[in-house]
Image 1 (cartoon, helix red, strand yellow):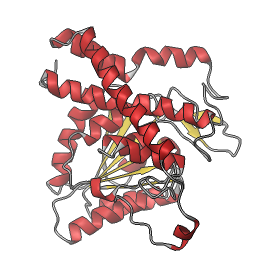
Image 2 (cartoon, rainbow, N blue to C red):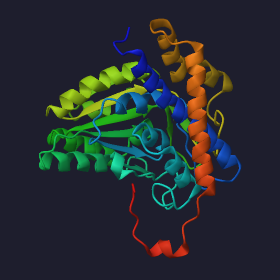
Image 3 (cartoon, helix red, strand yellow):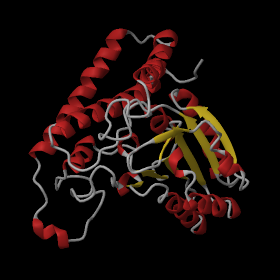
Image 4 (cartoon, rainbow, N blue to C red):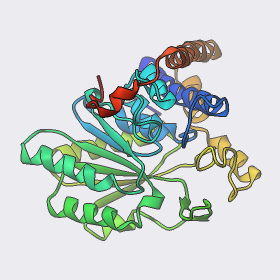
Amino acid sequence: MTDMDKADLRSLYRRMLLIRRFEEKSAEMYALAKIAGFLHLYIGEEAIAVGAIDVLRPDDYVISAYRDHGHCLARGSDPGKVMAELFGKATGLCQGKGGSMHLVDVQNRFMGGYAIVGGHIPLAAGLAFAAKYQKQDLVTVCFFGEGAVPSGQAHEAFNLAALWKLPVVFICENNRYGMGTPVHRAVALYEDVAEAARSYGITAERVDGMDVLAVRTLMRTVVEQVRAGQGPCFIEAMTYRFMGHSMADPSHGHYRTKDEVEEYRKRDPLLVLKETMLNQTSCSEADFKQLEREVGDVVAAAVKFADESPFPEPASLHADIMVGD
């Protein structure tokens, strides 16, 4: 059972649906060569970003890795500006100079996506240190994949966060596959990656990352504790990305079978929440069709805005970038 009302559940579902349809459209635009470079999609993981960010205050910090579209949208960024950034247009969040892996929206306290695996985890500790040093009542939430956990900088950040009792929540989106080699081979990671945090004395929890309500419930408790000065927390969200690592292997990738992916699709975050809403509220299929229309219009408008926007002027290469404007 959930203590959330129909309107709140509808809001959670709508945000997850926005991320899903935005990512699907991004894949389509990539195939049409509207988006260049790398493109790493968040399809299947929507419950983590939406559930975690829903309990934050507008002035809390969020920071992410290169699979950042979902977190940015969940934080409230304008879909049109996000799509324009993917298109490399001047109207994008970073004026077309960041692209898919480097979204930043300071106004919404989304402090960036970073392409170096694990490289942003110390930045999260830095944001939390600054907040504590300035006696600000703020929490920093840092998202990363399980492949970042073995990196040295992650351990350094965990160590300092524990030592200084920093107000930071580390959220590992554990897809069970850690990307390692240049050819994108993978090995299944079934061990408890949260042990890396526990070894430094950080409280660690595991949650079903396919259930937005489970993520939200745990995150609400964790954020209260961290904000109260009890030190950092590590959340291992067990999830399953339905797409490949990137558009270089867009379907099930070279390391998973189609049957495996289809089995996990039975736990699609959208289906999990939809079933709860149908069983526990007055929501009907008509409500979900209406949400599909609403979100479809938003995504279509985002693509139109991006497509019709100009590319940056060459002279802008030498200009300062005002992110988040």
